[in-house]
Image 1 (spheres, helix red, strand yellow):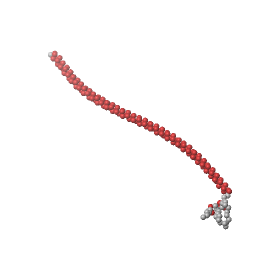
Image 2: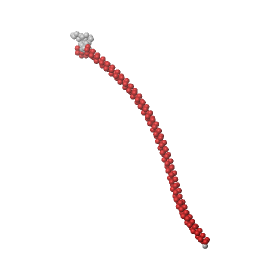
Image 3: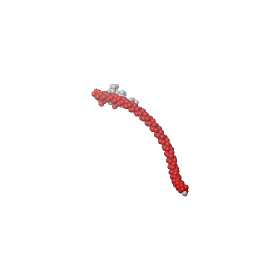
Image 4: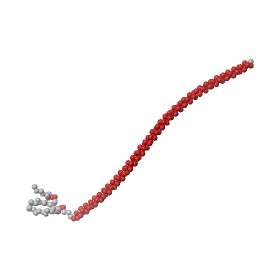
Length: 175
């Protein structure tokens, strides 16, 4: 089986070498008339390619600059984030310390208030005892005053009886 080149691939018809009736073409393959390119078109294509290359290079340089700027921004953002994180950690530690201080002070104040309540309860109990003792003293004083007034009345009764008896004796002595 002999191999053949596809005829439409190169724009011309190639015949196998064993065909002797038709003249053979030269071994170099040329373009068919439909593919002929003018020099102006080549220059235009080359010019457009150069413009595309320049645009590509410009875009690459812009992309590189943008990439560099992005990396700078990322580094700056990372630095800021680290600083903010460190500041946040310091603030959290300060808040935690202050919270512990406040909790300690609240605990101390609570214990002082409790001690004060106990002391106030003791003082109130002492005052109640004192008031009870005063009430008892006042009651006894009133009782003693009543007794003294009764005895004074009795004494006055005795005095009047004694003075009457003395008058009677003096009258009897006169007689």
